[in-house]
Amino acid sequence: MPDPTRPSVAADFFGIRGKSALVTGGAQGIGLATARLLAELGADVTIADREESPGRDAASPIGARFAAVDVTSSEEVDAAVEQIVDRHGRLDIAVNCAGIKYGSPGAELDDEAWARAFDINTAGVMRVSRAAGRAMLASGGGAIVNIASISGTVVNVPQWQAGYNASKAAVILLTKSLAVEWAARGVRVNSVSPGYVETAFTELSRSKPERMAIWLERTPMHRIARADEIANAVLFLASDLSSFVTGADLVVDGGYTAA
Image (cartoon, rainbow, N blue to C red; front, side, top):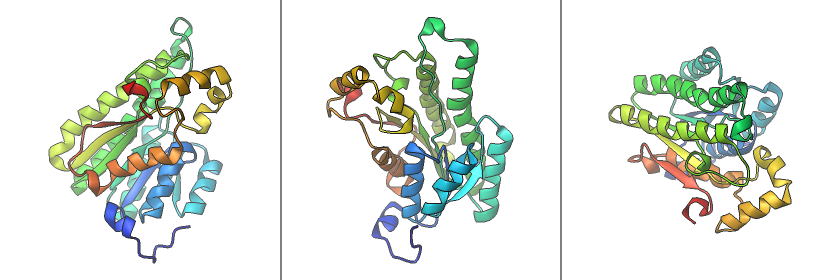
């Protein structure tokens, strides 16, 4: 657990100390890595996840709080943000990491899977951004960081995942739209588009040697990312170091989309 009494040059450098932060999907993967990093730098972090037991288990060791939140529920999202504002007087940072992935060829993609991908990956980001944005606009500013994906910009191969790709493309344009709308009022909205990352999210795909071989061949750095490497990019966009950055999509993919 971070020691809040110990001086930290890094915390002062990033301007994170003492800020309130909400991280959805924070029980594992990129969300947990981000929550841990923000907590280490002195933020008061709330991990939001729909799975209560894993969420509490993730929050406790890093000194974070936990809120049971399903991002498909506006009521639960609004309540979590209101609790943070009631406790701190404001919400400074919101990171949207909650998401799901459906892999299905387009001709076999059913309506239910399509709708669920958008309800969680896109509408979920909208619900959290809306609630966080209201709080930030009321208090005079804040930073929202949405986890998009390179799948929102390019079509990954060899897997077929039209629904997921479309939902993440929508996240990128939603980010830009809110960024422009709120820029003059001090609320910055940016996204991070990771390439392939070593998390539970990609575990099944990583277990298939032929798929991994194609991923690595197409990634100039010839490896996949660690979750903490994506968290570092989120930190930059959430911190004072990016005070003039809004509406950006920061691609962190080892060169995949550049090749």
